[in-house]
Length: 317
Image (cartoon, rainbow, N blue to C red; front, side):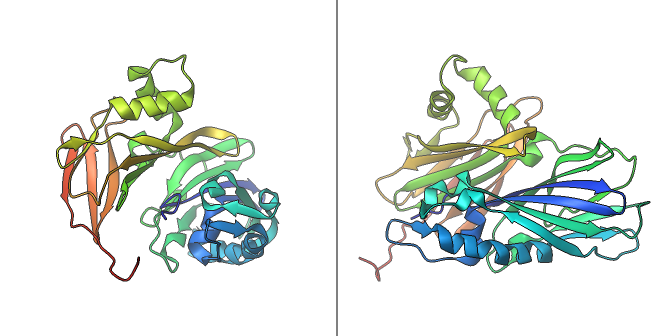
């Protein structure tokens, strides 16, 4: 059974008011599964009560790994104000529905004074226990002005902001994440991409009057093919979800595509040929057998060839 999403996604909205920063930190319920591994039944259903009990524990992780440093080098102390986990009402939830459930944390950080000079934001939650890629989109506001909006905060890329200093927005290529996973039943591609970017790609090849689900399915059937042992694989759209940042910014699309095979993929060619003047490249991580591959798709290197061994677990039926 494959988990629904191989990356932790979160959104942080900060509002500077005098000598305080009010932070709203949004996660998807799947993070509770990735970081805390609660029990599930044979259908991969989780007790929502057990997930609710984990929200406070996860809040402690957030305060440990999401940090704000002032110009003098001191980290600001967080204060948990509240947790909104109303999306976890009910009895059970299936693993495939976890992305539909949002959880909000409210924190308050005390500034050294109301005349701050520089703030640096850090996010390192992906290093906790599991080597899980994590993406955090940071927005920051003060006195009705936008200082940052949907800037990607990554382990290797903290963000420093100064009053009145304009931040360079990240390009669509930098905001796109792509993960291919090989399994006994086929190849799975999970793509998180800015909505405006993917809609522009759709407009180039798909009719605009069709439902979005049909347009996305048609797009992957006609574009960017994957071959296994010289045979073109037929993609199946497993999931498409709109990921928004509290109704601010353009948002992102999460697309889950399955390419079924009769056995473990062996000689595979993965291709991506669609680009435009804004979307010129994107990074992808491919997990096949026990190997991890990293590839930057672009017009200059639109394919990657992977030869993997068939995995057989003799200890299982």
